[in-house]
Amino acid sequence: MSAISDFAATVQTSFQSVTAALDNIAADEANLAKQITDLQAQLSAAGTLSAADQAALDSVATAASAMAAKTQGIADNVPDLPAPPPTV
Image (cartoon, rainbow, N blue to C red; front, side):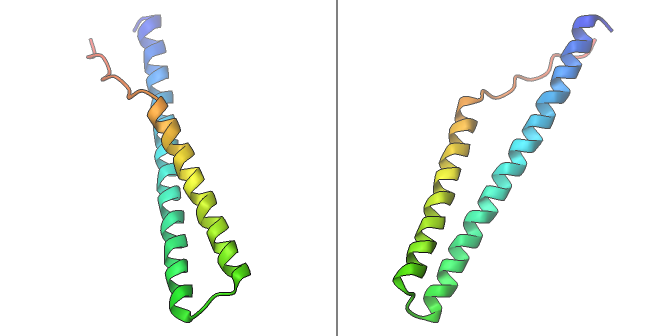
């Protein structure tokens, strides 16, 4: 292997690690959003919430939405990886 192909293999491994980490963040984010929605539904079914409790829920939901938007912004700004070159 040449120095260039060695470097390309190293970079490809790094890209795969970053992709896996971002996939994990996206999955965690989706799970958090679902848990917040489920909690809101359970609390609403239980009866009327106090204004303070509703404000706390609204704050958490707003923060989760902001995190989702930030993560999507990162994903939108990172170009998809090109297909790796064929091996020689």
